[in-house]
Each structure stands twice: as structure tokens, then as C-alpha cells.
Length: 422
Image (tube, rainbow, N blue to C red; front, side, top):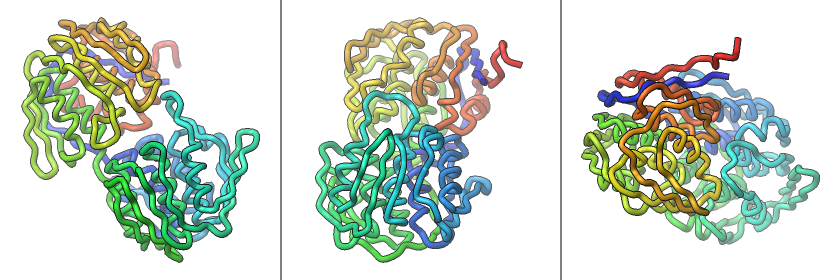
């Protein structure tokens, strides 16, 4: 296994480029199963989660491969409706294939997904919604067997605005007979991106980005060419990297509107932020101010995926910041590692109290999930001395060569094998 080694203390300065959004690319790749023909997905990040999705597509009978920053999928010969447990466990977004396979094949056989353990993230919300589409579901011995011989549209009211459930319903309902209405739908930008991709394939969906999405079933979808939106959490990571180092960065290929909630927090912390159509310029003071209260919420609120990253940044701010995690119960796994680096953080339930310290210090730490890994990288950019970060397989799930981008703007960071490995 590899690790990242970081020598902190250098203000970052220069320009970085944001890749395509992981959380948009994955459901879009699942949706390519629905098209009768070739789909070309541009701006598709070269990360391990995308590679896992490509492997699933090939298992299903598609011909899927990467060409530069694009993934090309020929789904003309889809011949399977099952996904082995080994493939399902590689990422949590693998459950997105359930709705797509059902719509294409009329049946599906999968296991429960894997990925980062963030606390309870039950897919019963997905299954209950799919049953409303007249899909028969049988759960036995860890496998989910579904049949949708006569899928029919319906009104589905979600108990919570789950992104995954919203996406799965969209995928399953796109060829169902009649109209499907999703009430209390998730409003994240990635939902809008999936809607736009499906409509490009010939679907009839509107309402993405609002809490009510309407899907008019169509007979067939076709391959298309599409460009994935930029990754808003990668954008946030660079913003935090500038903030914690007192740096100045121009962050390119972004949609500023998608990070407004985080930008507001950064401004409260003392950063100067300006933006154009696809660029954010951020300038940070030598030391940040604390932010009284940060509460994670569904979009357009403060994103749960940004919580660990901004917590790392504010661990060296002047004052006390309070975080309330309202989406996942297992989102504080990064705290022990930050504490090892000198941060003063106390957690109780879903609340974390961060008392800013003057400086963090290098240590050997291990990441426990994707965003926690990014948080440790951000913290290490400030830390005095050398920080060794293991568990970076999590980082590679969502970031494409993050260390190279940070190195290009002045960070002293590199990847190497752990010393006890040959």
C-alpha cells in the first residue's frame, strides 16, 4: 500500500484545475446501460470508483473503456442483470446500477453495496420506492432479487431527500409506463446532471434541482455524448488548502454556484473570494477566524462531504467553531487523526467542538474514509514537520492525482510505498 508524505508550512499559490464530479459521473455511467448504442461521457475523473463502474459495465455485457478524460460505453449487447458481490462491495454507488438494470432488463440481482462506512445508509428507501413502480423485490441471504415485468409510473414521496434514492427512481422509471412523480426529491447538482444526461438519451424528465421531479416514461433510450459537471467537493478541497496555508489560488473549471454554502463559511473565516463564470479566486489571511456554527444539510445547504475538510481547515483558526452533522452518523472518523496532529476537537454524538490551535504537527495518521483522507491532506499542509498519511486508497476513490495538483502550487507532498513494504 502507498502513503502520502507531506511537509507542511508553505502557503499555496498558483492555479489548479478541477476534474469531473465523482458523484455525477457514477450515476451517469450506470445510466449508459439504458441506451441502445454508444455513449461518450466526457470529463470523467480517472479515479478508482469510476474504474469500478467501468468493470461493472463490462460484466453486464457493455463494451466500456477509457479514452483520455472520456469513458466510452457501447451498451448495445447488455446480456446480464446480475452484479457479483465482489464488484458491489468496491463502492457504495454501485447500488445505482439497480434502477438502470431493471429498466433495461426487467430484472436485477445484486448484493448490498460497499464503499466508505459512514454510518447507516440503508437502501430500504430505494427498495420501498421501487416497489411503488410495481417492481417485485425479494431479499434473501444478502442478495436483492428484483423483477419489473410491468413497471408502471407512480407518485413516490420520499421520507428524506436521499440523493441515491432519487437517482435510482429516475433510472428505473425512465422507461416505466406512464408518469412518475418524485416528491421530496434531492436537489443536488448531480441530480440535475443525471436528468440532463437522460434527456440527452431521449428521456422526458423535468424538475431536477427542485423537490418535485416528473418522469414521463418512454419506450427506448439511445446513446449520446455528454460532459460531466465539475466536482464541487474537489473545489472545496482546494479552497480549504488555500485557507489553511494562508495561500492564494485560482481554481479553474468550477461552477461557483455549487459551492456557495462553503464559500460563505470561507468568507466568515476571513478569506477573500471572487469568481467568474468557471473560476474561483481565493486569498486567505495568515490565520483564519473561527466560524460559530456549521450545520450539514441537503443541497443547497452545507454539504456533508465538505464537513471533514473544513473542520481540518478551522482546526487552526482563532476561536471556537461548532459542527453539527445531520446527514451521516459516522462522519467524525477523521477526528482522532486530527487530534494526533495537535487539533483540539471534542465530539459528542453528531456535534464537534473545534477550538483552534496555533499550529498542527506532523504525525503518522491513517485515513478511514474518502473525505477524511482529504481532510488529513489539508491538515498536513499546515502541520510543522512531516506527516505520513496511510489509507490513501480511500483518497483515490474520489480524487485524481491530488498530490500532483497540490505540488504544482507549492505544496511539499509526494506519494511513496510504506517503509515496511518491498
